[in-house]
Length: 333
Image (tube, rainbow, N blue to C red; front, side, top):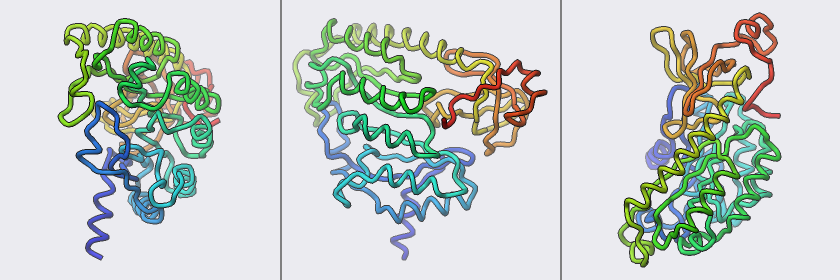
């Protein structure tokens, strides 16, 4: 019993008012050339399904409204202990919990997630329209050097499949610049991929060799200055994309999970925003943290939006006050 209790507590962690992380797996059985997780955490290990559902029920009873599924590769959940992926089943059964309102998945492994799987996930009722899909690069040559068994075309198809089901979805990604052997031509392929796909959220990092990884001994190390220039170019492009995406939300209604409130201003997260890594919604007026409220976006910035609370979706007076068109955004179709 004590061992089970310790294990239970190890699998959950708070993520803010009314939000909690639920670790569905640990370790990784892949061998990406830039990553030391398999050496540090061991092979992929899933948590039993019933245990995760029990933990989710306890969290919901404590007032948690959003559960964030985490692991080094969440979308392969179940392959080691059940012989097949059960991530869609897990999310569907979590959706049956009346106390939960949002389910969010972090860290989908691009080489092993298919267009078919993301379509199935996108149809889970309480899954937020958010896909965390780290591509790492978009040059097939660099992807091979990274030991990422996927092509740029396949990743583009997967992203398109998710957006086909959820047109207002947020696709978040991360990329590495300066990986050994990355040429100007390789970088331009990555740049054009980002320009075409237009991620709602993107993190860009300069490659740093990790001891014990294949990438650390590859030839063709890229000069730091060149890598930093590439990072700047991508971030400038992404900043413009984010600003345009946010402008499309102005006068639209979206649900926001409020995290803090002080001096007549509240801050929260929309369905497009995971804790710690994404943007915020600034709400005029005090709102009790831990609530999910409907807001109308009034102003857009590159990394956050401003909004006012709309009491009800059909509240015409509130719509008039904020100029809201009444169109909903970032919610289930």
